[in-house]
Length: 273
Image (cartoon, rainbow, N blue to C red; front, side):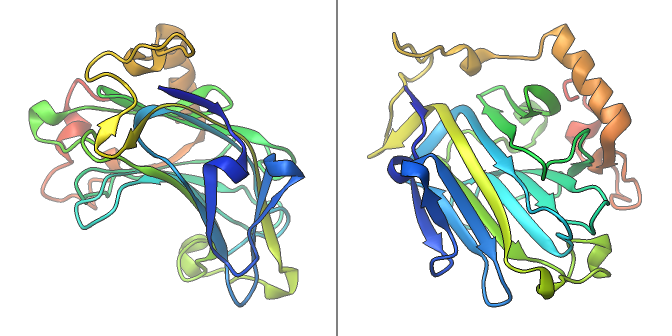
C-alpha cells in the first residue's frame, strides 16, 4: 500500500514534448505546453492495480479551442483497460467540456460528458479517480460526477486484472475537440499551458508481478484503505444526481441513435447508476 503525497520528480517521467513539459518548484509543480510543433506528456513511474488517485489541474486559459488535456489511467496492449478524464478546450468564455470514458479489455464507447460549475482555468481543482474491484468513481473537488459499477455478472468487462499507469498529455485535436472540429486551434495564442500539482496516490502498486496490497483486503498501518471497499453514501449519491441533472451534456446510456441494437447492458441494469 502506498500513499504518496507526490513529488513529480520522484513519481513521474516526462515522456514526450522536447522540453515542453517542465517540472518546477522542486518537484511540486508540473506544466505541459503545446505549440504548433508539438504537445507534451508525462507518465507515472509506478503501475497501480486499484487505488484512489488525486491530481490538481489548472487548465489552458483563454481561447483553448482545439486543445485537449488528458489525464487518465491506462494499461497497454490491444485489450487494454483505461479510465479517462479529458478536458476539451473551447473559445474564450465558452465552457470546457469534461469528457469521461471507461475501457474494459479494449472496449470503450462509454462516454459521459459534463460542463463544470466553475472556471477550470482560473485556479487549481482536484480531479480524482477511485478505482476498486466493485466500482470506479470520478470526482471533481470531492463531488462525485460519475460511477461505473462492476457489471461482470451481466457480461460487461471491468478493469481489474491489468495494472495501469497514470498518463497525462496536452495535444492538438482540432479535427474533433471543439464543436466536432468546426473550431480550429488559434496558434497565435500559443504556447498553451496546463499546470499540475498535489498528486496523491493511495493505491496498490504493482511491481514484478505482485501487488503492494495483500490479495483481498489491503491492510496497512500507514494509510487508510477505505477506498478499497468504498461506495457512494446517500449524500454522495444526491450530489452526483445534482451534477448529472444540471451539468451532464452527453450520456452514452441515453444515446439510442448510437446503439440501434439496444443500449449497452450496463445502461439498463439496475446495478448501474
